[in-house]
Amino acid sequence: MKIRTELIHFSEALQLECGETLDSFDLMIESYGELNESKSNAILVCHAFSGNHHVAGENKELGIGWWDQIVGPKKAIDTDKYYVVCCNNLGGCAGSSGPTSINKKTGKVFGKDFPQVSVSDWVNSQKILMDKLEISSWHFVVGGSLGGMQALQWSIAYPNHIKKAGIFAAAAKSSTQNIAMNEVARESIRKDKNFYDGDYYDKNVTPKSGLKTARMLGHITYLSEELMDSRFGRKFQDEDSKVDEDVNFEVENYLQYKGSKFSELFDANTYILMTKAMDEYDAGNSKGLDQALRNIKSELLIIGFYSDWLYPYQRGKEIQIAAMNNNIKSSFLVFNGENGHDSFLFSSKEYSNAIEKFIES
Amino acid sequence: MSTKLTKIINHWVPKNSKVIDFGCGEGSLLSELIETKDVLGYGVEISDSKIEKCIEKGVPVIKHNIDSGIDQFMQSGFDLSIMARSIQCLKDPKLALNNMLQISKRCVVTLPNLGYWSCRINLAFGKMPVTPELPSSWYETENIHLCTIRDFENLCSNENIYIKDRIYLNKNGRQGNLASLSPNFLAVEGVYLLEK
Image (cartoon, rainbow over all chains, first blue to last red):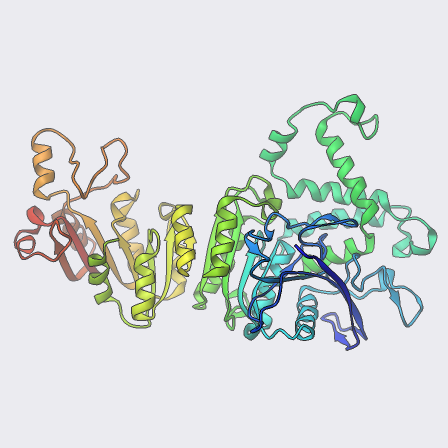
């Protein structure tokens, strides 16, 4: 499979939901497969909060794509048949404009001054990308978790430019518990002595410790209790592979390792910004969900997982019911996926078949 | 579902109506109704393999265990709800029947008749009926609330449910004159259009 990675500069201004404006912006995108002549086979994949544009295949810098089990030749989202695009969201730290980019007005990195972007802003920027690619309608917009919120927002904001949407392990809004978890994560970053109130870029340090703790907490919420029990149980870590001597159990070692690795690669301001965008999204807003979904024309495939306690499957069901109340063609499925919230990342026969059949139907 | 039963139900479905099919199986009835009556149809099903077939046919489907309640569908403004050959599998058929009539103005229910003569012969010989229509043995059947046509019609009467139309099917799945003569003895299946 050919992987095309490109940085696209957009010189038009983007008005953001927070009131600020980005005078210009960059999007790092990756694409696979070929756009057909009628341009009717384009699929947009939206990434979750710590994801990036590298969805499928393997590259040197980012390894194997985050949705490689689902996207690729002969996979559920078949790159032999479809032209698949994903961009690193604005505010991210994988190439698109974000806190680590240079602010042209000051000549310095944006840092904490990068405007607070929202799910709507991402969708609007993806619409500008779509226009640039000269695609008039996505055949399918899909994502899991925060990516699912973008797929829902696409259906709401651009009903004439999307035929089908896949909303997986997602909700129409974050729950109180979601916001609470995210606030603990943000607090651990803010209280890191190397955070310097978000201005750490010229200090030659990064708030790794805070970011690591944030990721460790996040990681627990992505897995299910059953999976943790079956994968680690109460097994002790063997001496030779301990990340440090304080570690006792395998699960501790695993979280320490994952947290450290993440803190080397991810930007702390992006972490704060992305979690806030997730917390603040509310598809229903003051109008209520039924009212908000009124104009949707796309067909919806909503999927939840029994083991997901971060975005329980009932949240997906609520979206389907609101859609059905509005006479929108919509399906709701729930699968056993044992990987908790992360289940949407992994292929299973039922899950992959449902996606494939939905796209093809 | 047999094409004969599909045709009978099809006859009762208004064009462009909003329909929900409880226990929709592989979605063949809904697929037919979408094609011929341009309905907005939703299926409710619990089996993943059947759900996959619905998706393949482009039939919107909801994975849901009907036994856990169907009140969630009450706000959706359905014109018709359908439960074909499933009501006898539910824990609380009476509640489901009443709920269906709250979900939609009308509902279609079909059920196998335990009063059919060959079932009675089985029982006369002291055995639970195993017939082409009820093929499973007692220990593996999903039919936990079987009834006769008379039982069902009595229930409708007790619950003030109006039987707007009814068709009795013979063993060939057709509307039979003989079956209609003495349905509780000669009909294999009852097909009802109900209203409250």
